Length: 382
Image 1 (cartoon, rainbow, N blue to C red):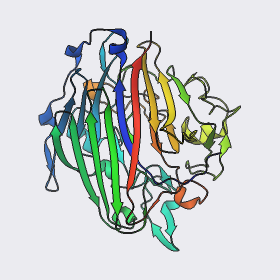
Image 2 (image 1 turned 120 degrees about the vertical axis):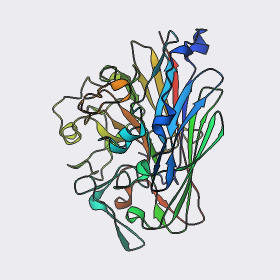
Image 3 (image 1 turned 90 degrees about the vertical axis):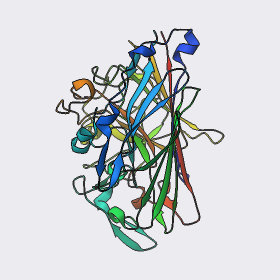
């Protein structure tokens, strides 16, 4: 069982090797860029824009500095046809008013939940916003998903974001200075890296919150996607999705994804944990690789042949199955985002770690640097 403490990190690489491996012609003319003017807006004296990253092979990702959100990610299928595989909106006004504020977002200061919005450091208690019932979720009412990051496009393939989170912002102690770099490399990787330093002892748990559908955004259920999670344990929850504190085997439960299994195969089983989560919305305890990144997950979409693999240095992975999507949100191309038409795989430390001393620590001290990496690697199969 993994109970090791780790000082965090987070970066994200999206890699698509599909068409190189199969010598296919990439149909890049199928990529439809969004209207950049629809993302230009000044809010509280800060400018919001849309930035386009392209590599030599024609892969594209569009990112806004509002919440550091990945707005689009175009990758090919087994025949070289491109689809945008992340949910999102086509203009900034829809992002500002959306019922789902986390589409493609950078999440912090603490991704996931903290029980009762309360934790202590060195005997001092801190109180956070209760924005998820009686609990605190994803940094509070104004988390990093809803702030305007200072953005500099370094070149056609690289976007650098900065944000300074002030002491006691949303209740968290310490001024946190954060840098994030998105880079679309010529190896077909969308890489996102996080660095952070603090002037007071605090807690940090940053993550990325893209909603994926490997068929293309809004193109039907994800329950037929096949999922592997390289995790022998998970952290069961109480009502409100707060961990009980236990670390429990996945064997003989609907949470055993140690082999490729259709997401929807057991999602409606008679199981208390699935009832609490309204389906899958749980943290998995990953097998640890002491010599390289942890192999966290693999998702395969059988029709398009798209495969996504996840690598990280984080000890946990939150798997969310789109249980709260209900068709009321209209996204890009006017598509309705319906029930369980997207999944999230958020690399992270465990939820409510500040209140569970036996979970990997999320404490960051002055003089130390937080760094985190996650890789979403794309390929195809026939």
